[in-house]
Image (cartoon, rainbow, N blue to C red; front, side, top):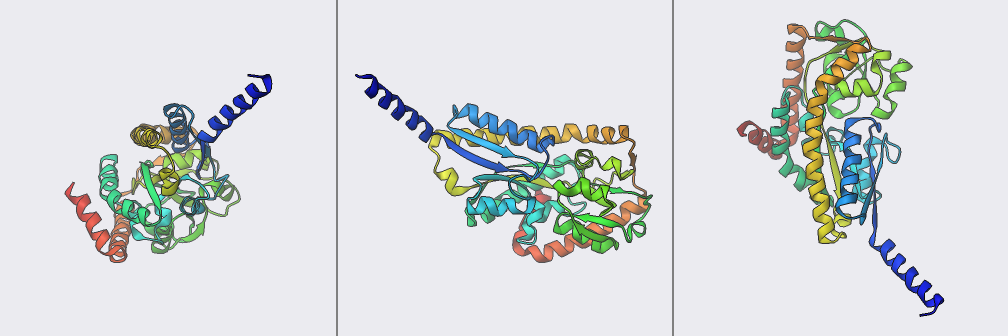
Amino acid sequence: MTFKHALIAATAVAAGTAFAQTKWDLPAAYPASNFHTENLVQFANDVDKATAGKLKITVHANASLFKANEIKRAVQSGQAQIGEMLLVNAENENPIYGADGIPFVATSYAEARKLAAAQKPILDKLLAAQGMKLLYTVAWPPQGIFANKDITSVADMRGLKWRAYSPATAKIAELVGAQPVTIQQAELSQALATGVINSYMSSGSTGYDSKTYESIKYFYDTQAWMPKNAVLMNQKAFDALDKPTQEALLKSAAAAEARGWKVSEEKNEWYKKALADKGMKIVKPTPKLMADMKQVGSIMLADWQKKAGADGQALIEAYNKK
């Protein structure tokens, strides 16, 4: 074989190798330092290793590729092959997505896992109809109220400039008399620093990531609900993979789900301590505030059940049974 022929053969082999490698983009809405994003990066590394480099997934953190509310559509349309979204963000499209955003339905990790199991078959059906597949979900730590004032009852929340990042958080603003302002995670620090908002409900994780302690001094640990992030993929992109790659991807996703839930639970107390260390007051809510917020939750549950119809009924029944 001449040198020229050897070169052509080597080029053909290299081209074959390059052709065999599949590259996927994974848009995510949260900072690179957030535990969800760290878990995604670990998942992508696991997939790379398990497929011997055949499937490369690039994680784009902090809404750098698509904004939080654009990620689901990007995966559905194939602009991204895979993506992570906060399920409650899609509640206006179908109430089922908002099941884990109703206050005081699931408030502990054990209850959140039960709710996830009850929600999954209906989510699978919904996403399949849109050409997508649910890979895994991970819960955020329980949600509390960040505010720049002393709050002993819902009456004290009237007039607060309230961050609304989902239909459920907008509904809470309406019910407590706060002013909802739509702010996604990537813009949260700036919105706090410039006074666009002075309150919101989220986890200690979000409070820590966004340096909320620089603008707000109180965190009321209501443990009201535990929303989940979901990793979705485009079904056609998945179907285009060979069987061993598909299996490696699903196995890595199962490991990411187990790891993500474990880390979320472990970090819950850590985040609260870290906020306290930064000067934030971690407050046990008054019985009056808890009673008021549970009233808000029962109004929202009744409202949600009305909108969610038979699927919602089936979900709540399955949740209560487990």
